[in-house]
Length: 208
Image (cartoon, rainbow, N blue to C red; front, side, top):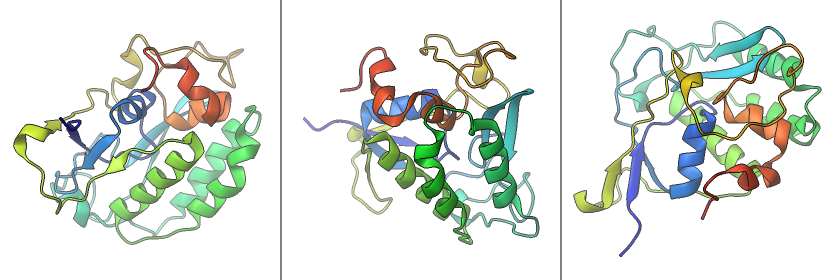
C-alpha cells in the first residue's frame, strides 16, 4: 500500500513543527485552492531577534481580509518588503554558526519577484529542501488522488500560538543569553543555528 498523501497549506518558511511533519511524511500535496486566511503562516514567519520574536509578513494585494484561493493571491511590491525581510534575517542570524553557509543562496532567493504568492512560497520550499538535504514528494493539484489516499493535515500552530507546542528538541539559539528558549519559530532559526545536516539528528522520533 502506498503512503498516504498529506494535503496541507503552503507556508512562508514554515514553523519547525510544520517542516518536521513534511519531512516525516514526505508525500505532500499543497492545497492551492485553500482560501487565504489572515493571521496564518501562509504569508508570515517568526524569526528570533535580540528583542525576542519578530513577525515578518509578505504584503498582498487586496489586504488580509480576503478569502481568495491562495493560488490567486498577488504579492504587493509597493514597499521593499523582500529587502527588509532579508535585512532582518541577516541582522538576527549573522552570528549563527551556520548562517554563512546559506547566506549567498538566500540572497539570491530574495531577488526573485514573482507576481503570485504561491510561486514565491514554492521557491522557498525548493530552497529549503536543498538546504535540509531532503525531499517531500510534491503531488500536483491535477494528479488523480483517491480519497482513501488523502489525509488533510491542518497545522494547529498559528502566529498567535506557535510557541505553545511541546516536545520539540531544544537547541542553542543566537540570543540565548538575552531570551528564554523560543520553540517552534520558523525553520530558518533551527537551520541557521544547527545546520541542515544536523537537524535530522534532533528529531524524536527520527525521520524515516
